[in-house]
Amino acid sequence: MSEGDGELEPLAPGLYLVATPIGNLGDITLRALEVLRGVELIACEDTRQTQKLLNHFAIDVRTVSYHQHNERGRAEELVERLAAGARIAVVSDAGTPAISDPGGWLVKAALEAGVNVWPVPGANAALSALIASGLNTERFSFEGFLPEKAGERRTRLEDLARLAAEADKALGGAAGTIIFYEAPHRIEDTLADVEAVWGDAVRVVLARELTKLHEEFLRGTVAEVRANLKTRDRVRGEIVLLVEPAQRSDGAAVAESVAKRVAAMVKEGLDEKDALKRLARETGQSKSELYRELQRERARR
Ligand code: SAM
Image 1 (spheres, helix red, strand yellow):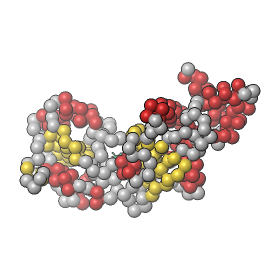
Image 2 (tube, rainbow, N blue to C red):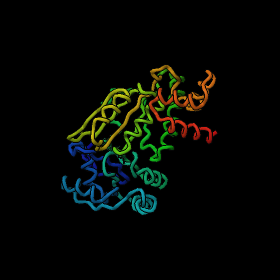
Image 3 (cartoon, rainbow, N blue to C red):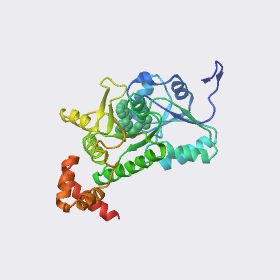
Image 4 (cartoon, helix red, strand yellow):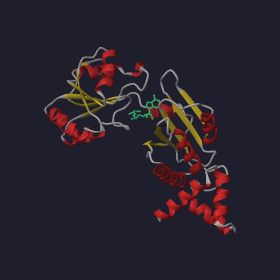
């Protein structure tokens, strides 16, 4: 049953994308509970994980696994049932389905089959981090996870920096905040890349363990946040990283490529080796890292 403006109505047939808590069980919504109780089947990223939530709220509904490895095959089965009038909920391990989580494929397949798709909004790590970050909330973009490989990650950040610089020009200095999901064992490398691309003064916020006991926000320049993390034995927990790109503190263009910066120094009279040395001093990156990046940029041309 679902309650609109006081009237109880039966749950309409269709696909329900139900957000679940990202750490604090109190963040489940009344409507999420109603829908989870009212459907015939709950498609879960991990049935064991969701079962804990269902047990906590005494919900006894059949579950079926639906994750990135069986998403397409399972979608077909589920859409067949939906087309026959079933009510099915999709949940991920935590947060909003289809946001860096399974769900998107099923939504497309359901819509193509003429099935109604209903959002049941609730917790989401990206937006929770953004609204408390103190960064630009008027305009933002969500990037999800960066590539795992170091070279690809750097290239993605450089591409984003170029896009942000163009947006800044077009919009009069308001490229907005970029939101990433990041794993604790990669966060320090990613922050080093953020600093290399945007400079040490770019504002970042690291939001850790949102809605949980050890929730923490580190706000500051990327250099300050990196210095803070260096004082810890290990960075743990789930992390959202927010970056608000802006002009570099030294006034250099945003995310100028290594090749461009080296070329400018060569024009000033330095040879390439000395230019890389100076750039290493200015950015805090190692000379060999910059040299590798220079080679990558040249290979991309
Ligand atoms: N669909 C989810 C949502 O709506 O937020 C995101 C799923 S994604 C697979 C998981 C990532 O989200 C984590 O690696 C972390 O980057 C971020 N995340 C999830 N819960 C979080 C939390 N409580 N605090 C900080 N970040 C969190």
